Image (cartoon, rainbow over all chains, first blue to last red; front, top):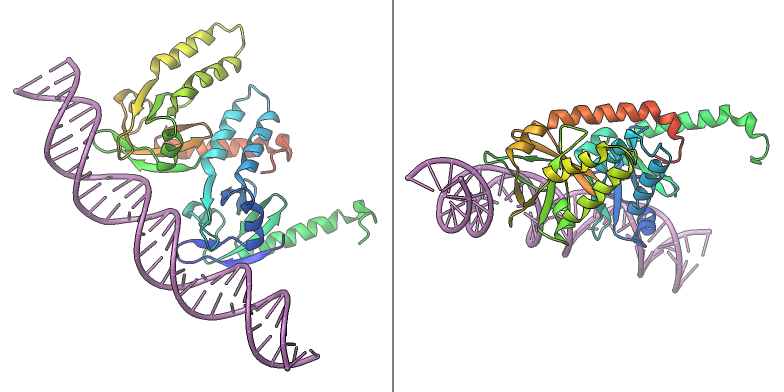
Length: 147
Length: 147
DNA sequence: CTTCTTTGCATGGTATATCATGGGATTTTT
DNA sequence: AAAAATCCCATGATATACCATGCAAAGAAG
């Protein structure tokens, strides 16, 4: 999956790139979106993945931990299903758009089994940051990468 | 899933968000509500889940704890059925509203198989607190969660 | 290799259905 | 009889489904 730029109209509607749609569509016509915990962006995935993530997090914590209970609040409280219509669009909420500082343009970034939606400028910076990070760690990669 | 803000009218009536209703409606037109033991909020779920939640709670406590019985008694003693009408509203009691400090606005917070109802200001603080907490403990979470 | 055609996708606009909410009216309880 | 709870209808707002246009990439024909 590569990076795709789509417009967000005045109502907050945005087309889910067809490649992204195709992957989800095998399962359903719905995706789940939530505010990223790490970055000013929206994250999206299939519902099954969210539940897996939730249970993974649970098992990675002390079973008796109160944090577990709080996590379910945070995850399920923030996440929402978004069904896309026949033309493949979803209607994003104010909360999500605000968190990602998105107004009229959105950048879709594939992340394996999930994806992120960014404000274009923010993504540009983030990408540069990631590249710099990789370059810094490059010596430790040796020539295994072959690049 | 999701967080939804609804009004509580002068009679104490409040609309159960339609998404929540849809899930319950497959089984019945009733939900069960009780005062949360951990937070100043109301908890709600489908009736079938109440017993399971109670037993979950038991296993999350010291098996030989004396308080175990007391806690389940507390929940079962407090819990009550609330049927929603054709427009999807329930009438909350003074006891519940007071416990959650709710007057004219209620915030529904999804929690997977159950949900919570909060006073808006309280939830705002609670959410901020949880996010800070999670962020602080983040390194220990590793990337198992992937969020 | 160039040009024309076709197909799929993003995007704008509009209509329809759904939902939250206010206000009675009717019933039940004490 | 008074108060509280339940039911029902009306309305405005909003989300969702649907239709239509335009663009751009891919493929076929000359």
